[in-house]
Every structure is written in C-alpha cells, then in structure tokens.
Image (cartoon, rainbow, N blue to C red; front, side, top):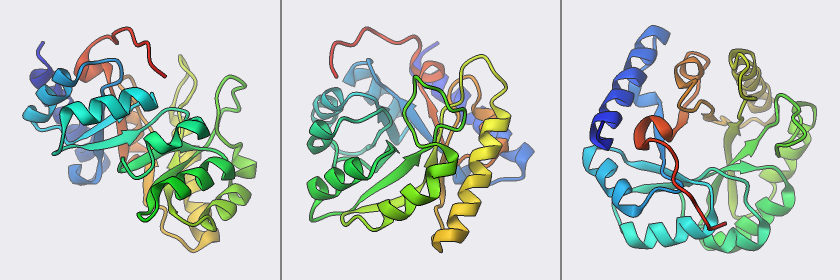
Length: 226
C-alpha cells in the first residue's frame, strides 16, 4: 500500500472513531510519525494531506526539517536531552514529552523570543524503563513548569505499556488532565495518547493528538542519529 493510501485509511478510521465517540474529526490531530523514514516519505504524506509530523531524534528532526522545507508542522515526540534542546526549541509546534523543570527551562531559553508549547509526559503505568512524571507528582511539576518563562504547558501525554489494555491508562490521563486544569486554572487542551495499534481507543477516551507511524509509513527503517 502506498503512503497516500495508508494515510487515507488512517484518516477514515480516525473519522469513524470520532463518529462513534460523538466527536468532530477536526478535534483530533494525526501526527504522522516519520522517524527513521526519509524526507521523501514526508513529502509524499504531505502531498496526500498530512500536515503534522513527529520525530524522536533531535538531529534527525533538524536535518529532515531543513530538507523538507516549509508547509508542514513538526512535533518532537521522543525523550529530549537538555543539550539538544537548541535543535528543537522554537522549531516545532509541540514538544510532547517534557518531564522536568530543567528541560522546560532549557527549552524556554532556547525558544526565545518565541514561546514553545510543551506537554507534560506522565508515566501512568509507573514503568521503570520510561521517563515521565508519576501521576501523584504531576501537579507539583506542572505548577513549577507553568512558572518557567518561554514555554507554555498545553496538556499531557502518555504511552501505555505494550501488550496491555490501554484504555485504563488513557482514562487515567484524561482524568488527571481534568484535575490539573482545575487546580491550575488553565485549559490544558491537549491529550497526546494513542499510536498505530490503539489510536481508536485513545480517541474514545478523549485524545486530541494521535501519534501514528507504522500504519502510515510502514515498518521503521534503521536510524543512526540521536
């Protein structure tokens, strides 16, 4: 299946999931995860109608962004080292996985004079191998981050463990978002959750950004950048 055909199929499934959930399909942003795929694949997806693309590696993002040029929005969806914030800050529509005040501060400094929208990464399942703040500590960290100049906290993201029912994790993040929005007096409009294998369930639970790679681009290619 071509990238264009895969994109159309994902769009149709997102629209159907939104209809089942009583939501407007326009309320869900499909982030086409192009990591390890060449710039030509991004251009092919963009020609088919994709507008938002996600990358996990700062250097790959910088190189691909320069090669693709204008006309698309980039998202950084991986764990970001502070020493690579300069490659990302001010260059992307959204940084999806901020889990420390230190990283938020570095992004804010590097984004100046613009403001960098970010999401708080929450480790809902408490996995030792993943980053993200524990749900119990999320409010304290969110309060600290909203005080950081140069960044804007737009919401939350999570990634459930593989091979488990993701729905309880998605619901937990949606509930946490609602509690934090009340506590902070901020809308926190973004919920980034759901990937190729579970995005329909994520949409049913309120996801606003689904991160879809394999279902659009096929299997990952080998990457040698970080």
